Length: 179
Ligand SMILES: O=P(O)(O)OC[C@H]1O[C@H](OP(=O)(O)OP(=O)(O)O)[C@H](O)[C@@H]1O
Ligand code: HPA
Image: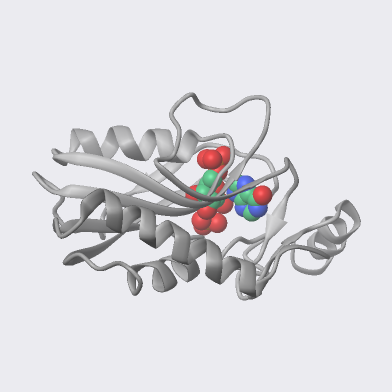
């Protein structure tokens, strides 16, 4: 595994993200929504650094079941708190194809949110990507499959305290072990 962003760099990136979000909203209350499952580690670190009053909710979005390529995107909002007329900030770990963020923006807008902004730890720089862009990004990364700090392969590696590139042979070995 090749470490791409270490713990110290991650802490600095999350602090930068929080400063930018604080600057944007100032003291305005927001409803901050974690995109399950990948955002949980970032979310816990980020919300404790934000200064405005916050309501906290969760929504599930899943499309990489069992692989490194996106499949059908399924959104489950059963556990989400009311977002009508609220300023919503969606927090996710990574913007890859952008499909997840694009669909969540549309769905939360359709639910009557007053505004929807999006914050991600990582934005992959790749050819094919949704034109909708996240409002806040901590790091841009190359087009490689990464794990750690919430990001998984087959639900493994979310606990790693850094972001690492999972090499093709490690992807194969993990599949053989847990797949
Ligand atoms: O920009 P995209 O190509 O849509 O990819 C980004 C999404 O993919 C991952 O979720 P995943 O579907 O793997 O579910 P998980 O959070 O449960 O791991 C990640 O957490 C983002 O939500
Ligand atoms: O690079 C990635 N790693 C883990 N999960 C992901 N979901 C989209 N891209 C990625």
